Length: 341
Length: 198
Length: 51
Image 1: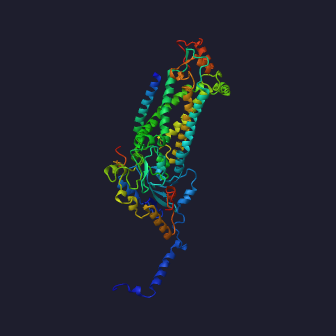
Image 2 (image 1 turned 180 degrees about the vertical axis):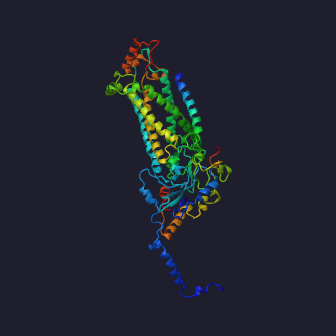
Image 3 (image 1 turned 90 degrees about the vertical axis):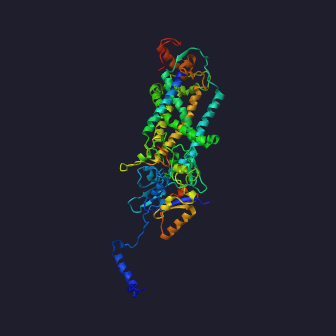
């Protein structure tokens, strides 16, 4: 080609040029090693995954203000999925169905616990209207919370096939709203319950004796003495307060997910929320049973607030004595009966 | 039928965020919703690598497994999509997703947390393909037009690959062989446990 | 019965009140995930519907 550099045609140019260039390379300080491993310290995905401890995440830097975006891989999501679709249904099924079965057997074997002496027709005030209000506030919220919560865990398997995806999703959307908003009056009810009933729910010697006699629950005519609340009721009180508080705290973090801020903490809160819920529901089934069909005369306590005196003498003998001392009159209800405090 | 996947070659990613920008533009993704993001591991240190991450469209998707209203479905191509009509915005899919793909329009989980949004592999949703209704809810449907996701198309270094899982796995293996190194097929073991190497 | 109905009514009223309060403090992600340096005029409504 005319005009091409004739120097290139000179024999030996290329090797000379190469040697000349090599001088520049060798002159560079780093060239002393002359080996260049671009990946020597590169993060390797499988090494990172193997190094992760339980619940850890692989995370880095992002330019997005949302902290969750910095997580690249959180393998704990897989364990959470296994728990919610595998383990939790077993826990819930055994707890709830098991309790229902237990109560059914109990009803068949022991039957309805009757007032041994028969109903007297005379009553004594057991719960003032404010106490009953608080109980029904908490209880009605609990029913909706329990049903909507169970819908989240089991609805897809049990209810969706019956109603189809659209109807089920619409119902579930409302259920979720009800769950989220009724949680607040439920929490209020819990606080009030704690304040008005803690005094009568401190465990004592009478409770030990009551428990030793099995609450008299298995034998007709056996009625160990009890104060305003017997040991079984105190157990329910503490289950409600402690369980309810755990549900409230875990639920609070789930409804305000930016508070814990990271997905691992949220996973832990959902596990607590779900497991306690299943056990709580099982316990409440027993409470509802004994307060309704399980025991004659029990429902009146929360229904009208007035209970039959014979029922009270059999199940809360010490409380009846206290009340009669306060009122200064024998077993009849006086027009100005002191409220059962 | 091809089973489509994403593969981000972390040794090529230069954190330019073209994939993020392309996705945001193509689907008019609102501010605050991050369908795709670039995460930089070991930022500033030797061995720094960047990975472009969005929904991986997992085999046996955990999001689909935990959804209380079962609003997810997997197409014949392996794309994991969901119905915003059924979604109740509970957040379970976010807890289960190993890659943090689900996004929500509002931050508190009550009332109007809003419908979950995520990468759709540019395959829209249950609405009719390529209609304004589908675009308003799920964004563009490139797959219906025979195109691949815009993020991979726009990748400046061709680090983000999208398409038939077997083909992109082959491409990546060729690269690893040719250059002699590769930091891994990020997310493949977690997402595609049935075929973690392609 | 009166007490029971009163409790139900209170629960519903409380829930509605809580709903109103919470929806007022609810933050859209465009606000929650933008730093002070970003001035977001119209965050966009595609994919998420009108706010």
